[in-house]
Image (cartoon, rainbow, N blue to C red; front, side, top):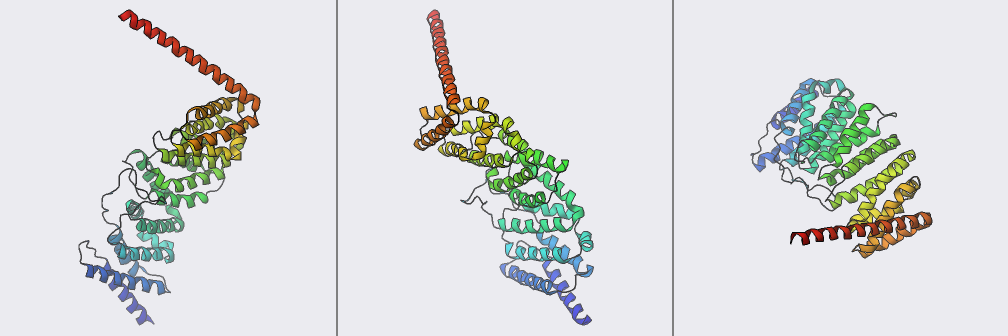
Length: 403
């Protein structure tokens, strides 16, 4: 039995030695041979009963590092990433992926079955930073595998968790505030964070609230955030579900970073606000009603029909009506003005029809208040017309005097 184990170890060391040398320019035949040897190595690791010792682990981690930690090609996408129909980033395939995929499979198995004490010898801060850099790969397949490995390390090596969270913080902040906003791996890092946040206990620690306020909320700012909006929304919703009063921080942050000319982002933001209103602490409704309804009204007046329709659809949500009922005197004038503006001048027939429906619901809710606001609006418009006529008269007098 000892001889068998020795021969098995020798075979593994031989395979590891061969696969430790990387050459991007090597011929296709040599690449195929390397892939076969990696498959052999993976097969042996799968069938091993005993844990690997330092005699194998040391060269094995050297082999993993030499294959994974490589210079990445410069990004080929502009600051706003190209999107597919399902909002997945179009990948730039890595030529060496056929053997990199096996390297990731080996890595994941090693992390899963090796003891924490042994892993600690080979996985240090520098190693983790090198892994984090690989999230900039434009190959979606690599980022998916990397996400699994990185999260497995986070789960198993608990003493590295604060460091790993901090380094991911730094990546997010650098992306938002210091780069030209190109980082393909933000979505995958947010997916890791989604599972981390899910495990937070209540009440939340201050450092975790800080992460929500100073990192997750500003991630709404970049132009290309559509690519990772789904993952970002999940992370944010986890926080608000755990402590509903945090919804105010998120809602005000979204309003702060509201896009001016990006209609796609506006539609996404309206949807996110609608979800947040369903989970936020109802005691905050009165305070949030005016800024929220003001923004929604501005959106339903948008000349982009998709934005306008999406903003009108939020009034199908019962929670929005509950929020409105908390501050009717403040919010109704804004809504009435928005309704009448659409009915008088919006180009889209469907937007006008939806506006009629919402107007009907508002009149049914508070007919006297709607009439009162409509009268005030008419008085305001008449006053503005008079002021405009007065300005014209003044300019005409100035022009005549100049002649």
